[in-house]
Each structure stands twice: as C-alpha cells, then as structure tokens.
Amino acid sequence: MTDGVDIFDRAAVRRYRDRAASTVQSVAPILEDAADRLLDRVSDTTRYFQAALDIGGRGVVAPRLREMGISTVAMDLSLPMAARSGAPYVVGDEETLPFGEGSFDLVVANLALHWVNDLPGALIQIRRAMKPDGLFLASLPLLGSLGDFRHALTEAEAELRGGASPRISPFPELRDLAGLLQRAGFASPVADQEEVSLLYGNPLTLLRDLQAAGERNAIRERSRAIPPRGLFPAALMRLPLDAEGRMKVTLRLGIMTGWSSGNTQAEV
Image (tube, rainbow, N blue to C red; front, side):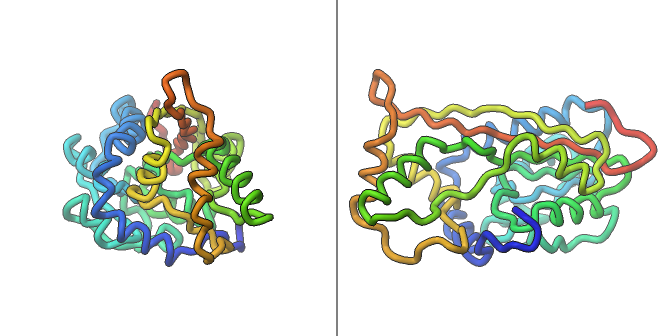
C-alpha cells in the first residue's frame, strides 16, 4: 500500500479471486454487512446518483446499487468474480483503472483495496474517473483486524520452524485514511471506524471463510514452502475462546468518504 514498493503479488490476488468466485457465496452475509454499512451513506445523502462504479464488490454491491436505480458497472481483477455482479461488468485493475475522466458520479469499493500496492495512486485514478461532486465510498480492514489470529500464527510458526514468514496483509491505521483521501485530491475527506464481530464455534471455519472470500496470503515475500502440518492447528489452539468455546474475531473496518472536487458537495 506504499509508493514504489510492490508488497503484494497481484497475479496471486487474481488467482485467489478466480478460485473464490465459486465459493464466495458462503461468506455473503459478512460481505453484505460491510456493504450495507457503506451504502447507508448513499441513502443518507441528498445527492441523486446516475452512474456508479463498483470495485471488487464480489456480487454484493452492484445488485444493491441497481436496486436503488443507479446504473452500475462492476469491475474486478478476476473475470469470474466480476461476472458474479451481472452485466455490465469489466475486468480491470485498481492500479490501472480502464476508465476515462468523469465517467462516474459514485464509486464504491467494499473490502477491495487492501491488496493494492500503490493505494495513493489508485485513489488518484479513482478521483479522476469521477464527475465533479461525485461521491467515493470505501471500506478496508484496519490494523488490529485478525490481530489475535496474526499473533497466534507468528508464535506457532516461530515455535515449529524457528522463524515466521508474513501471512496476513499489513493493514493501514485509521489515522492514515483521511490523509490518503486528501492527498488524492478528494474534498471533505472523512475516515471513521466500525467493528464487525464474528463468532466461530470451530476455529478452522475462519480459515475456510478467508479462502472462500479469496483472502489468501498474497504478500510477495510470503514463503512458498508447504506450511508444517501442525502450523494452523497449533495457531488455532492459542486463540482465546469464550465461555462456550467459541472464538471471537473482530474485523475493524475503516470507512473512507470523499467527494470529487466540484462547485458543491452534498451533505452525508
């Protein structure tokens, strides 16, 4: 997510999303929850939107926008994942948007930008693809999301292998998001946080859900070696459980809101 540094393997991101296109429906309630938190902001504004771009919505966002009467193009790095949103859809890369200036008055990116290498550059391209007084909404995981899981994996791998390789994406902090929007040229930038709490009776289900959503490890410096057989069971045994033996997972969502420059900005 930093300038000039390829932290993520974008080809791997595409492969994982290709595979997840057939399984992502199993985690639709989680994606829908995050999407609803974003799209509530569309309903709250006084602005009427006509042309929207859904970036990486995984078949959840575009249908909702169309139900609101907004003509929507869905874009994804993966063809089968883009097709889940129904026509019109395109295959495109957030790092090189395939749209001309002033194409949309609404852009929504729901849990779609955390595998982007140059997030400032991607935000600039999004802003340029927007009409004056257009609204940009995005959600992405913040630092602290999956914190217990990250810590448990690191400890278990260090114990089994004498060292640990990066396995979870480095997430931004909330304080960074408004600055990123301002740097990209958005007006009235706002960043706030919401938390989604999930309970898992079987901790292994967390791993299955991450894979089903296409959220596998795409860090470029990840280890290509097959993980030790006992790594994930050892890590999951370290996770705190509630009185009923369930594991609580907290997803900290950073919500980004910004307006493309124009004569006026509607109230959100």
